[in-house]
Length: 177
Image (cartoon, rainbow, N blue to C red; front, side):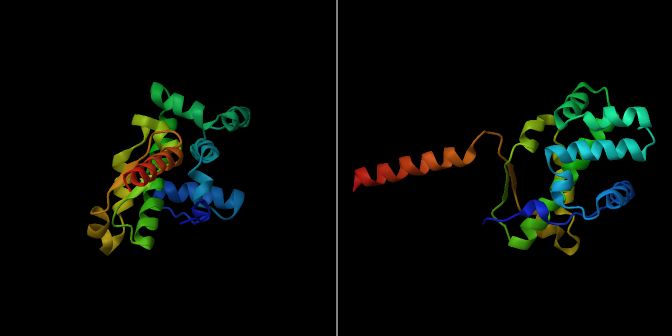
């Protein structure tokens, strides 16, 4: 099923997320999933948290704006930057919310497969607990959502690997005919 899922809307589920949304709405207008659930989105989220927390003075704003998702992830992994850890936790939760919305919309009872790199590259920094909590937090459909498995694809080029397997399978079938 092809589409532009990154452009679906995103919504806050806590007071902290509401603060982030207020700032981003004033700055950008519409907030899509891609605004936060992307490499540049991680940097946007980190910068927004710094501004909200009053940590980004005019002098620091340029330095904070220059941080990439990779820098933020390194800071979180080193345990030297609580804001970086919070950024990745928020990312994990929001990704769970969006994945849950899509699973509910499409009736994906067989499971959701997360691919695309960022979640897989975060490794232990990807907060699976927050992801799952937000994935399942669908009101009266919570038990329905709890039964849907989620899989994190960590290999590069999963589509090519799948196509190679399909080609081998079709060749084996042709040989046995």
